[in-house]
Image 1 (tube, rainbow, N blue to C red):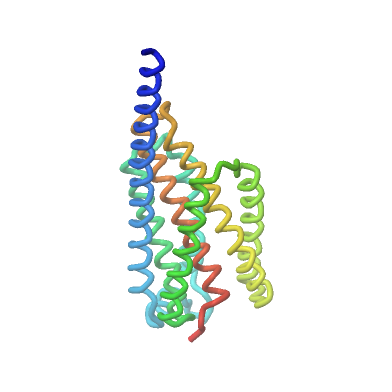
Image 2: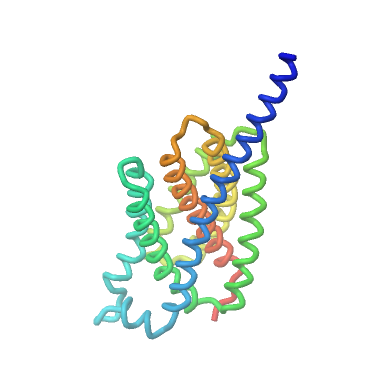
Length: 241
């Protein structure tokens, strides 16, 4: 009888874990899609030559200070959200999350001046397929990806620094190398991040509020990875206007 009870207790625990995980990931993907919706909508609305000339070109003909604010403010805001989430309320985090997505959308509007709409749409579909495949791999794999993820984050930092340098160098060869590395780095990090989120989703020690906050952080991380993967593939496959 005790063996039978243990079997049912184990089965019930497994069912509860799956339910917790499903609820957590539903929230994660909800946040991710909200961010994608905000960014894509603003990118499309602001992706016109008139908008770029009005807000991103200075009187001297160079890039305006606003351009650099829009381009780099999300970096600081993203770090703030991830580092201070325990001290901030869920409402505040969501507002910062929305501002982050909006800034990214305005920043991404420039791709509509460089690439054709059909090319952007095709790249989005390709990116979504690659992202989904790596997300499933990260969720289902039994291999510990911690060391792999740490290495990829180091490469990511290198790519980020190289990208800033290349804004001023404007080297096509460096841009190509960054894009190639980016595809491998961001697909790999997607698998790693999904595995980490799976561990969080199955952790019974986390409170409801903490899990809700972490689901927002998870949605933000997946959004960032998807956007960077999309931009890397676009630089490689996109047809310029």
